[in-house]
Image (cartoon, rainbow, N blue to C red; front, top):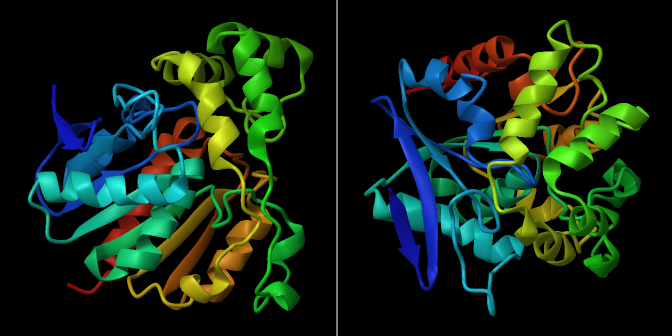
Length: 290
């Protein structure tokens, strides 16, 4: 299996296609199959070299139990470690949700290494909130840090495995914020099945520890967003209620940015409509000056 070693962590990745490299990250409780299973990776790989990665705490990546590195800064540097391992001087970065927060942090520090950044259904604070997305907070200097130890999702995952939790969510109809458009999808059963396949292809016992570490900061890092030098795409579903305002903040503060909202979709854009998601990504990539 292909791994990049960083200290005691073994960072898993999978490759497909040839051409300019695209590294991907994914959302919480997911893994690189978020992109590959619905076929987005395959569509991109017709013209690009796609490298789907599993973040710490997810998929086939492994990390030491006593120092797992479930913080955004460590995980951002993992992106560079995989690129170094593969000998990539520059690359495109395609991200989703929690992996998008990680990718934005990488771009803030190492944007000169990115050919582009594609941020789907995400924001820049590790604890996203609509409140601090308003323009009057853009120059705020002091933000509260949260204690993520009481994260309700962590409690849920301690009690239930992903499949049974997903079944309970669907049965209850309480699908906000991440799964709120799956039942409205013309391929609803496929979407639910695919989400279940993605969620269950990791060791779910690591998820609570990850959730109780990562989501701790309300600061969207506006000053650092303003310094991202590469072309950026902010892409999200029209009904992605958690990231509508954070997406607007990204579009307002990143210098070279395209903001695209996909009509009718929710948070799981690659699964809900892989063809339209891939088409938007390719359209953005095609427009980048070479």
